[in-house]
Amino acid sequence: MLKKLPIGLQDFRKIIENNFLYVDKTAYIHEVVSKPGTYFLSRPRRFGKSITVSLLHELYNGSRELFKGLWIEDKWDWNRKHPVLHFSLTSIGFQSIGLLPALLQEISLQARYHGISLSTEGLAPRFRELIVALAAGGQKTVVLVDEYDAPMIHYLGNQMAQAIENREILREFYSVLKDTDAFLELVFLTGVSKFSKTGIFSGLNNLDDLSMHPAFATMLGYTQEELETNFIREIETAGTILNMPRTKLLDKMKEWYNGYRFEENAEKVYNPVSVNHFFSRNKFQNFWFSTGTPSFLIHLLKKEGIFDLNLPAINPNGLETFELERLNLPAILFQTGYLTIQNVTNEGLFQLNYPNKEVRDTMIEILMKSSLSVNGENSIT
Image (tube, rainbow, N blue to C red):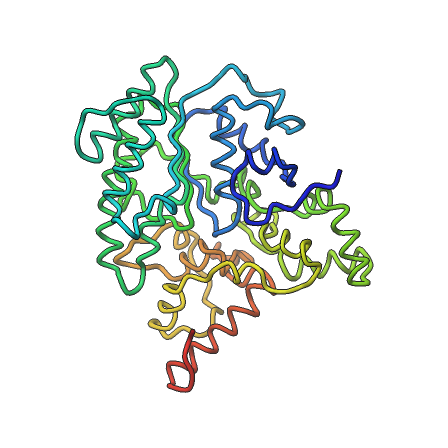
């Protein structure tokens, strides 16, 4: 039976139970969970981070029925269950009630869900108490944090003071993960940006960053092989509707939606949201940008007077991290997916460029409008 396209879905259980298409990435997941530790993964928005976190939650819940036919099904000990704390920082309400009250509220909600009554006060003490109490049942606690950086990214630009204040709150929150290491089975954090360890993950010396790890470069996004083996019927249908031979259709899809590279020697991948939208409409157009372009990025480019992203080659270390007080534009553009690794110079520098036509065409249009607005001829909406 033809599976439905998972447009807008981020919950692994809902995808599987309702027969939506899931491109099997569980071999990568197995590699992560085989070595308990603290992991971090940065990827652009709408690249599958939330589905990955949701999948990990179901794995540690022992939800074997959801993994039928997937790579990991016969390689995981389904009796190995762990209590899970799953935080999605985009949905805790920090914009309306403030970050500290939102985190305290979320900790209380999760404690109630697990049947635990907390007695301590304060963010770090309550979070620590919850982790330790869950592990008291005999199995160590798993902590999953999706969009760890949302309370900072949301305020970049015109509200930097709020972004910095939230960073200090998050630093206290994440510091608990170091103090409770003996009670933790696995910590997995995802986000769009990658702030330096001294900035927000102070003290997490054991943090294993998978963001530019060669073994995990294609963990999110669709490879060419995954596209052609998981979307056979969709490719056939699109070719018929657009009156294009299969080879020509695939070439055009690659031009429009492929091109993201997260390690210098890695295979390029497709943006999942664009692929799914394309097969839903059988029409070549911009899909990723329509899901939201961060206004802070446009204002930052405008402030810096940058209206052409043909940037000089940079040292790979320059893509690693940045701080709120020193926003590193190439790093931001790379981490948010507007630029990607095009090639490596003889000196070992990374030359960045637009990943594909979808990003290039729309970004050039935005930069042109930004340039005109600076000259008083137009304005950015």
